[in-house]
Structure formats: C-alpha cells, structure tokens
Length: 115
Image (cartoon, rainbow, N blue to C red; front, top):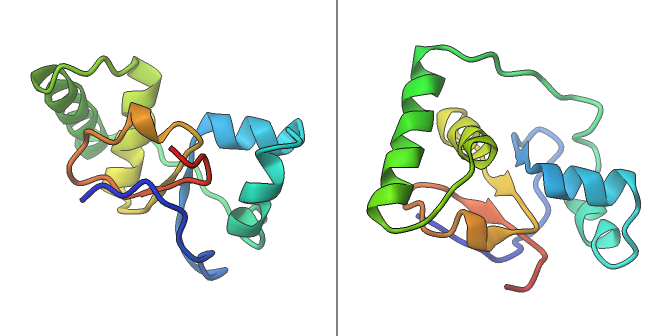
C-alpha cells in the first residue's frame, strides 16, 4: 500500500526510515522543507539504529529493483536500499521525493512535499 501524504506525526516510539533527502534538508536547514519534517522526526533522532545487510535485506533490495523494472520505473541502487530497509523493518519511509517510490505496492510513504 503506497501513500504519499503527510499523516500525523508518529509517536516517539514509532519506527521510521528517513530518506537522505529529508535528512539533508533538516541538517542543512532548508527553509521550505526542514520545518515540515522536524515535527515528524522530533523525538526519534536520539534513538536510531543501523540495519546491517543480511539475506532478507538483500533479497528485498532485489525485489524492489525487479518490481521497479517491471513497472517501467528507474530506481537507483541507493533508493532501492532505502525502500528495502523500510519494507524489511517494516516502517514508513519519510521522503521528500515520494514520486521515486510511489510505484512500490507495499511501501508506506510519509511526505510533506505535496506531490
């Protein structure tokens, strides 16, 4: 199920995967986008974890690349890793580029981009 709209901010215990575009806009304080994402990420930045690759993550990455190709969407290797991570956890992906992921059926998206 794919959704590209901003929902209410997750609770502090919620699990999220943050796309690099969102992290960059917050760290560099992009005047348009950073304020939109701070509310979503508040309380989560102190509690993060690293997901190391394993067989499940690698096969999910391959499935993301395969689904994208079948549907005629180019997905970069990096974006496929990000999507696969969200699918494996399972957790919503917070992205400012929902168009890059919208074609993936099982991926839940959170975005303030207004696309």
